[in-house]
Length: 249
Image 1 (cartoon, rainbow, N blue to C red):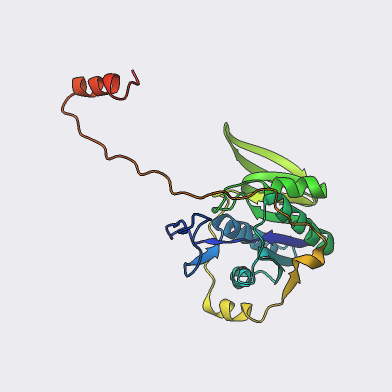
Image 2: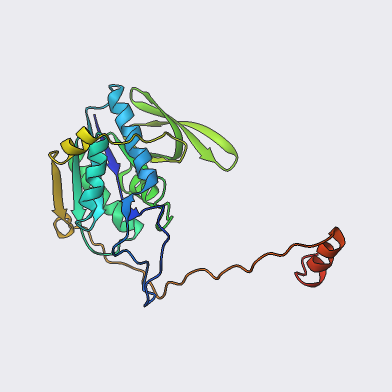
């Protein structure tokens, strides 16, 4: 059984995002980039299923510029067997990404596709659901626990009301939530081995998928700065300010 895992190159979560001077987007030049944290969790879960004997191969796939090879190499260093990069410099929307992933799914025929529930750069939370619709595969989103049951997966999902357990038939798309697992650190020998693992680069034009954007970014601005708080001397003063200044009571 093959497991396909999507990994995305994003601005490292420890780096403060800065808006470009022309307000056309976020400054990405000369800043640290890394694998989307939710995708790291997805990679870890795929590797655990392989180590438990439920899969023979884990394939890491990314869609983006040539620098995304570094992100794939990170997944290979964790333990993935090979990588696929669909190379493009275009700004992609979730539907285009889902269509490109569908192209890889049709080529590789995985039984499970693991994705992060969302990427921390756009927080769209759409790709997994769209991929399920395009491929006809079952879907289990926001997974906090995954158990393998022969031709099914038992997935515990984090929903607004608490936890929900479902069984989905394979093949299936699973999106990883934060509490699914704790990703492993890649050891130095594995990082060295990852450099020799196969990584296929496919130009986006060779997929036959249209990635034309339907949206245009008009302007990007930083959020307004919050005013400093004040310390009041009594409950009466607090109530007075809430009533007369904030007008919330």
